[in-house]
Image (cartoon, rainbow, N blue to C red; front, top):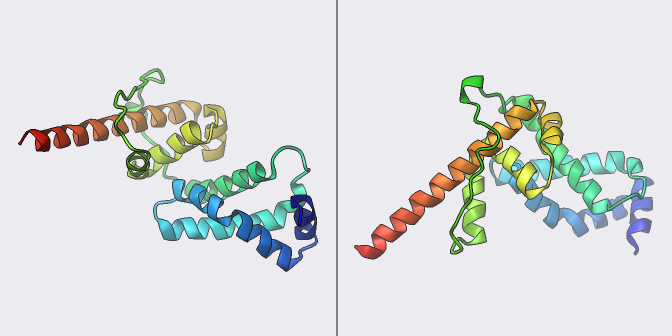
Length: 182
C-alpha cells in the first residue's frame, strides 16, 4: 500500500492502517524518543503518546514536505512538552557561558556508540538542547520556543553540553592511556 493511501486511511481512523503506520515507523521514531528521554521506559511512553498525537492530528499534515519529518516533529514536541511541564531547563544567570565558547573534539578514535552514551549521560537540560541543535538541526530560536527558554539559555546549555562532553571524553582517554602504560 502506498504511503499516501495509508495516510488517507489513518485520517479515516482505520485501525489497521494506524497499526501498519506504527509498524512502519515505530522503530525509527523510538530511536528518536531515546534521545529525548531519561530511560527506555520514558522513551516508550513518549513513543506511545507521540503516535496518539500523530493519529489525532494526521489531518494537519498537508502533504507538503516529508511525512516522516512531520512525524519526527510531533514526536520531539511530545517529548519536549513533558519536559517543559517538569521545568528542567531553567538555570541561573550566574552560570551562563558565552555563546561563542565552542569546543572541538580532536580524536578520530571515538566510536559512535561511545559518543551516544556520552550524550545520553549529559544532564537532561543539556542533552535536550544538544540533541535539538546538533543532531536534529534546530536553531537556537526554535529551541528557545520549543523549550520555553531564552535563546541565550539555549546557547549556554549547548556550550555547557559541549564542555561536559569534552571533559568526559578527555578524562576517559586519559584513563585509557594510563591503563595502557601501566
